[in-house]
Amino acid sequence: MKVGNKLIVITGASGSGKTTVSNYLHDNYGVLRVITHTTRPPRQGEQNKIDYYFETQASFAKNHYIESVNYAGNQYGSSREALQRAWRKRRVVSLVLDTKGAEAYVKVMPKQLIVLYVAITDAKILRARLEKRGDTPAAIEQRLQSEEAKRDLAVPAGLKGCAHVILNDSWDEAKQQVDQVLKEELIRK
Ligand SMILES: Nc1ncnc2c1ncn2[C@@H]1O[C@H](COP(=O)(O)OP(=O)(O)OP(=O)(O)O)[C@@H](O)[C@H]1O
Ligand SMILES: Nc1nc2c(ncn2[C@@H]2O[C@H](COP(=O)(O)O)[C@@H](O)[C@H]2O)c(=O)[nH]1
Image 1 (spheres, protein in one colour):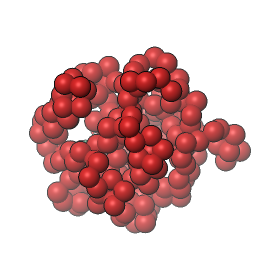
Image 2 (cartoon, protein in one colour):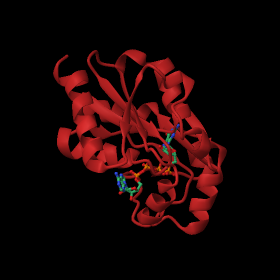
Image 3 (tube, rainbow, N blue to C red):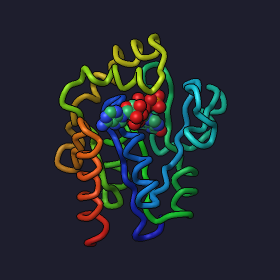
Image 4 (spheres, helix red, strand yellow):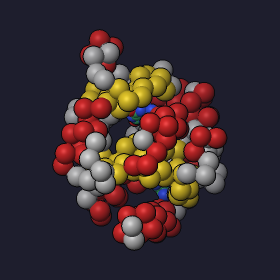
């Protein structure tokens, strides 16, 4: 692990806008996203090795994970290999995780992390965002009823005091908050 490498962990509720923030960091700051592994079937338009490494149960078990979780009935994991691959290309990379995964990274590599928790004021808008993304009604229902989705509606104990909360009720305002955090965390240091 090279000194000076940074990892921006983006966490929050399902549909809050984590991937949207990650795409913004890529397009505006050249921050590469670490691709994680999942046994979830691809959504329409998702591509293997770009959105995720889409795995079978058997292939999922073969990777070396820094952390892995079960989220709404599917497995997800962030591998050492994918993180090292991204850090070989860029000093600053991002990783989109549920809150359990984010808490694990705070324990494993606290000094290298910048943590963003993407929040929304009214949890009711999450359903509309997932619908807009094209998730099927059954997938949305399963997701929103899951323990994990409910848990991720609030900043967990392990992230309090270290996560920057990005309020994403409006994308224009969220972008400004992300810009401010990057200015404080990367540009001035
Ligand atoms: N501020 C916003 N206003 C309206 N729509 C938004 C906003 N931010 C993101 N969206 C839209 O909401 C949907 C969900 O966003 P995104 O996929 O980034 O969420 P996510 O947190 O990564 O979700 P998940 O954890 O389920 O993968 C997308 O269609 C995205 O374009
Ligand atoms: N702890 C981890 N969480 C991950 C990982 N990859 C993705 N995620 C999170 O899972 C949920 C569901 O993702 P979706 O793509 O099915 O909507 C979401 O919160 C992701 O951020 C991972 O490797 N580890």
